[in-house]
Amino acid sequence: MPKRVKVAWLFQHVLITANVSDKYKLPVGTRCEAEFYDEAGKKLDCKKTLASASEHSFHIGADLDKGKQYTCLLWFDNGEYSYDISEGLKKVKMSTKPTYAFYGKLVFNSDTQKHTAEMKPAVAQAVLKLNNVVQTGSGIFSISETTPIKYVFNVDAGTVVSVADAYTPKKVFLINNVGKAADFCVFAPDGGMKVNLQIDYNGKAENIENVTLQRERTTTLEGDLETMDFSIIITDFLDTNEQIEMNN
Image (cartoon, rainbow, N blue to C red; front, side, top):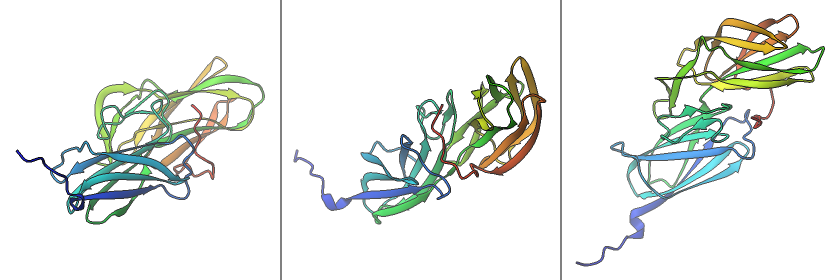
């Protein structure tokens, strides 16, 4: 039987540049993952390269058959302690310390070598902000166990999927100044959801009930730990002119 030889012109090296909005800055250590699917929806085991391109983007390269339609699913986060992608980008699960995450989906034809994809926030953010601190100490900011999160994220669908496994994100914080004390991110369904947020500090626990969390939005509890009196402020995701934090 004659040996099969690959013909170079039948293949195309495709380069995708995946961008977040200029209002976000991706810190060193951001993880990028990409999955390629053919027109029939079959996941491809193709050779690919992933490389940071700027503070706002990654380059994703792949060798594909020329002249065919493909779908690329894309995901940015800060690593395995934030999200578990071991089951693929159609079932992204929250890990122990969920922070920022972005997703993207691109349908393209490989006749064209260069493409761009826009990444969107995949999560809602909850922030604890303090106006008055009179002593040092530590506490816990969390989702109450009465309203656990029961979602994974499907990048292909661009939304969450309900699952049986429940998770309650929490963040330990140290008190030494005013301003943002703690934050975490969660998956939220289209249209948002109501949760109970809990603050434990110096032997006191306060439950703030029916707080709305929405994808691409930041919900901030702003107030005083001594009185446990907080107001609720909802803004665009990470609309604080700050760099995305990598600290866990």
